[in-house]
Length: 487
Image 1 (cartoon, helix red, strand yellow):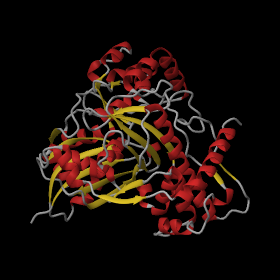
Image 2: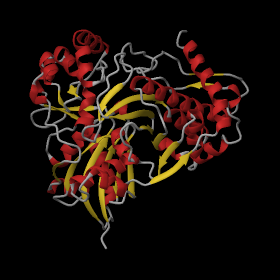
Image 3: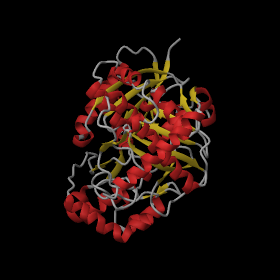
Image 4: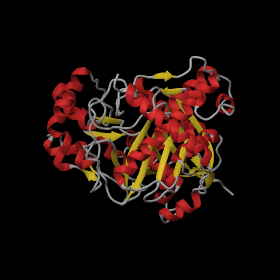
């Protein structure tokens, strides 16, 4: 019997990954090509994307039923009338102009989109700025595509977007799940640069002969609209309205699914469209959690099994890490201005530092980092609870960080609530495959796809004695951070 699968392309900040996912939600095969977000180039990126696909299709004798893509959010690409990518540069001057634009339009953009348009980062601040600073370049713009939209465009030649990604531009209306034409007019931006909005799971087009030869994917295989990586991760865990989830990677977004858009008047959080029609997301973010752990692994545990050795090394260290506190990236999310040079989307400008005994060793430092990451997740969950009025019953947790049982047990103990981890940690790939399964007609409804493709893994129950101890350490971490932010 021929093995069937869906091809998923996941473009992240540090790499592009490709997966073959079965209709039962199993990861059959994966590949990865590394890139650098800070030096990202569309031509080189496309080469890496096609190479990652070819690694999967070579010697694969099964049938690929459909293709879709997902990607990191906020990143976008501008195309000219020939469909070619437009390169542009930003500077301190463009940031300054962006801030001036937002004095007039920022509040209206935020109320419609749920995203304050950060200068030199978010499209809603960058594109109006380009009109002023680089008018000739601005006139060439024919379309704006989110990164996953661009991948789909390169696969099919068809231009379209979907709401979970497009809402990150600040030019979107999350209530109507369409472009905010009123704000686009106020900014005097041409309507034609905003592509058609398709539904998640809708067929965009087919793989043509040229792409087939380049990637090894058969001609006429349909390409389906995917979605933003975090939202795909949510359906890849099968979570529903009023449930919380964390997708742990370089950073850890924490999202709550709601049945209506919630806009925080203090601009601390983001509000997004979900990949499920009629559902929305309220989002906070624990900051750079995975980055500090990766630094530990790369610096002190360089062997192939570095992460396993890292996890093993911390098990004998007591709760509280001998009083050591680390502030190496985890934070309380604040999406509105001002934007600190130290940590752009943090509520406080805390310089990276380690506080405590001078006699600590690497295992103590490692546990302190795990604990700081878990404290930040708890603090951001509490922020979402305050804004939404919806209490956390348990936290769904996927992504690379969830591969560490030790870390997940700390997280449960810190929260005082269970942590649920799916069987497949790469839930974003599973979620994108769910959308592909609906688009191809393999499953007729989202519920059927989720029931057949999402497999539950471990549940980490909080230990009362550990939670009681962690409450004290958590408050110390919070209070110390507040003092550091005032220095």
